[in-house]
Image 1 (cartoon, rainbow, N blue to C red):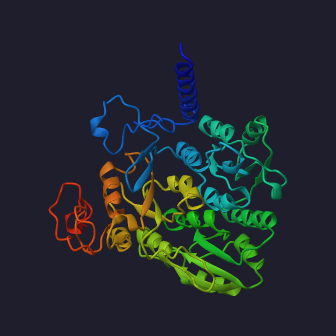
Image 2 (image 1 turned 45 degrees about the vertical axis):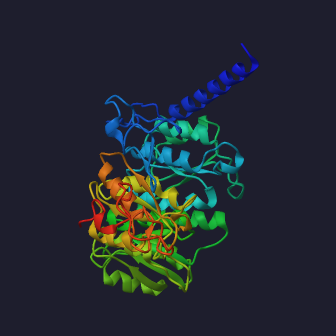
Image 3 (image 1 turned 120 degrees about the vertical axis):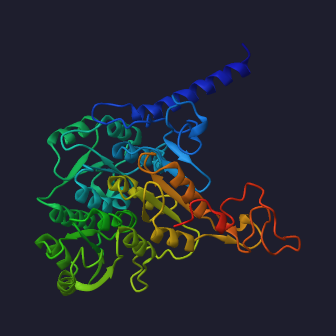
Length: 445
C-alpha cells in the first residue's frame, strides 16, 4: 500500500469517526422521545428529508439540518433535541474560542422559568440553555454537555452549569458526575424566579440594567417573543398577571430607583391598563403590542426606542429571523440562542402550512432589492425550528421565496438589474421563481 493511499484511508477514518461522534449526541433514549421521521444525523450528513424529500427513499433518515438558499431548518420537533442541535450549530466547541463559558439547564415544560433564564445566555455564560426533566437529564442533553466541555465563567467563580427552577437534586448530581461546577437559581413561583435571575445577572455582570421587559406569566404566545431579545441583550424579563403585579416584580423594579425603562409586551387584553398605570410608579412605561400573537411579534421585531436603544428596530432589508410555528412554542425557547451568535434574529410566529397575512406583509416589506446585480446584497435569512410535523416543506419554500433578493426593476432572474442597456424584459427561464412577485407561489393571502 502506498503512502498516499495510507494517508487517504486515515483521513477517511477520522472523518467517519467525527460524524459518528456528532450523531452519537442524538441516540434515542427513554428520556428523550423519538418523533416520527426525526432520526437525528450529524453535521455533514446529506440532506435526506425536508425540501426535496420526495426524491429520497422512504427509509432514508432525516437530516438534522435542512437548508435552502435563504433558510436553515433545525429539523426536529423534540425541544430537547432542538436545543442540543442549536447548541451544536452555534458553539462548535472545537477549541476554547468557540466553547461556551457556561450552560443553563432548565425544564422546558416550566416555560416561564426557561423563558426568563435566557437572560443568562449572553452574560455571564455565552452559552446555551439546554433542557432537562424535573427529575433527571435526558441523554441528548448529557451528551451535549460532554461535547461542549464548558470552560467556566471567570466572573462567576468558574461556574460551568447554572440550574434554574424547581429541579430534583438528581439533576445536579448528574451534572457534578461529569466534573462540572454548578450553581442554582430557584424561586417559589415564576415571578420569584425571574426576580432571582435579574439579581443573578446584576451580581455577575456588575450592573443593573435600567430597562426591563414586563410580560404576562399566563400568556405564552404574547410573552415568548421576549426570549430572543433577552438572550441578546442585558434587559431581563419580569412577570405580571393581567390585573396584578407580583410583589417579587415590584421588588425587582425598585432596584432601579424609580428610573426604570419598562417595556410591556402585549395588548391590554393580556396586561391591563391598570397594571400599566401602576408600573408607572417605578419608571417610564411603553407598551409594545399587536392585536394577536403574530402581530405582537411583528410589533416587537420592528420596535426601537431611540432614547434608550432598546428594541430590534428591523424595518429595512438585510436581516435574519427566527420562525417557529405558533403551535410549537417550546421550540422558541430552544431557538433563543439564534439571537445571540451569528446572524442575530428576532422571533416571528408562523403557521404550519403558510405564513399569516400580518407576518407575510412585514417580511415582504423587508424584501431585498438590487439595482444591477444580486451580488450587491443585502440578503435576508431565516432560522426555522421544527420538523415537518411542525412546519411543512411548502411553508419553508414560501419563506425561502419571500426572503430572496429581487431586482429593483421587477425583472426575473434572467435579467440582472435595470441599469444595463441590454436589461430588457427577459422571458421566464424556469429559475426565476420568487423574482416576479406576482408569480410567487404561496403569495395569495
